[in-house]
Length: 260
Length: 260
Figure 1: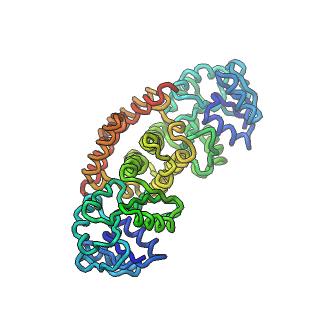
Figure 2: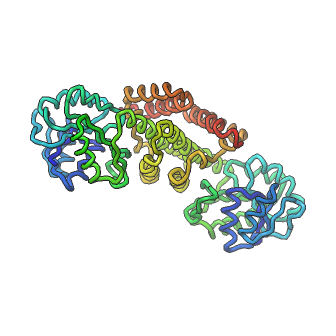
Figure 3: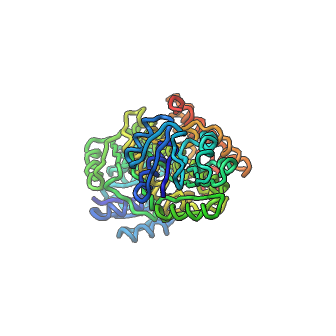
């Protein structure tokens, strides 16, 4: 397939890199030409910061921009790509945002957290595809199957639930690590001491039911420790961490009350 | 060394198992005899549910009970073990809780989350030791070194900070997984779809600074998605999840404001 990308961020980088192994990446568009060039040079594509310069002779356009920008981008693209399949890569954006403007609309959503610095294991990454037209859906499934062994045809509503769950599982767990680091940093204690704990907690969650794996003072209903931790956060004037500590502890306590 | 255990829970199980490879586990005490027997049979020790039956001729007594029970247990043990080193294994309990009653008091704290179903990688598990008497401290360091390559002499105050950080890094991240599972369960979506995301998020946190690795709608300041997710949780009548979603999003947003 001949594929062009709109956007040159983390998702575009990883997706263009893996797709370039078996497909031709034609152009990379970014509002910032240097960003487009940086990615284009890695996948043997041309870079542009001018939408009018995008070549219409492609099989697929992948929009990998921030969710807020998708509606504006499809308005700008539609006229040039009237008969080309255009997909976005967002978990939270309804296919309708494209389909209202463009007949051959689709979605190609990889459920993973991307950083430029880390390789992506595409075979293990679940991919969720959706398309307005059945033949486009078939084509997206085929493309997805060439990358991953976990491909699903999901509606926008299903994808939205999944993305909400991903915010809890990924964004919020990462913020928990961030808060933990702030606690140890304040004591000049090395955050790396917590690495085995972080990795083991994640390993346990994917091997067992996380609810069954819950440990800690809130799960045990240990009010002495809860009070002491809260006092420590108050003494450190960390009202933000204390709020999270109280809310999470309260909820863990409640959901494990029958056990305690 | 000749070692007896007070308690037969998760920590006692794993610690007795690994110590039994190079030391003699003499007795396992638990208020519930069957619990003591279950562990004793695995480490070639004797089981008892009667404190008076504990043999005083040992080199070390390890208290591995719930934090709340430690003060009561040391009262019961002291008379029988006047000249024996007694340690607890708690991150949040001051050595003073033992030292007020018992001269040869110490702490042997493994920073890890234990489940009966999973093997512990002791070599990678940080161990924190403390003792009132220098010769006891030296002995605990030696014992710890035989298990782990990460042994630290920490004061009770340092250990308490570390344990507070561990609550964020382990207990709260696990609760995030639990909440994510509740979100997908409600949609009959398979939680295992989130496994690659959970593992990758943890891997990134131990390779880079988690704050730099933060992703998601709150980090990007994407108010549309934040509102939609909040609405979904409200529609699902999940006031509990919505409270966590709002608080965490607000704090992530604030701490990344300069980036957005």
